[in-house]
Length: 86
Image 1 (cartoon, rainbow, N blue to C red):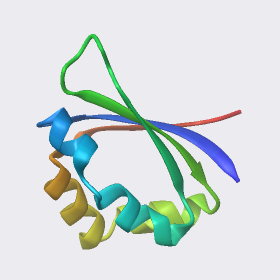
Image 2: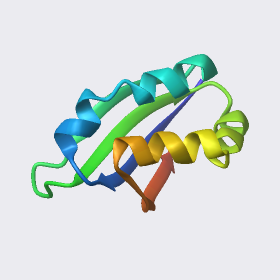
Image 3: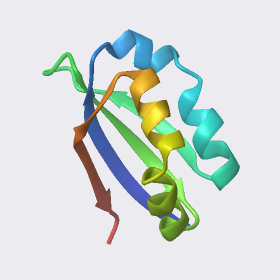
Image 4: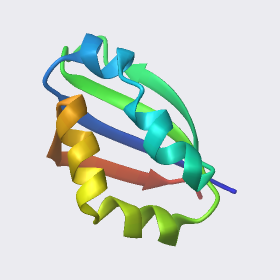
C-alpha cells in the first residue's frame, strides 16, 4: 500500500467536504482517504490517500465516471496534483 498526497482546487469547500462521492468512487478500489483544507486558500483542498494499486487508480481517473464524480464535487481537474511518498 502506497501513500499519496493529492491536492486540487474546488468550487465550494463545504460542498466538497460533505459529498459522499470520494468514498463511493474510491472505496471499491480499496483506497482510504483523509481530507484537508488549506487555511490560506479558501478553494484548495487535499487528500492523503492510501492506494493499493496506483495503476488501477490512474485508469479509473481517466474514466467518465471519475470526471462525473469530480464535476459533482466541484473539483477543478486542471489543478489536480498527485505526490507519491518516497
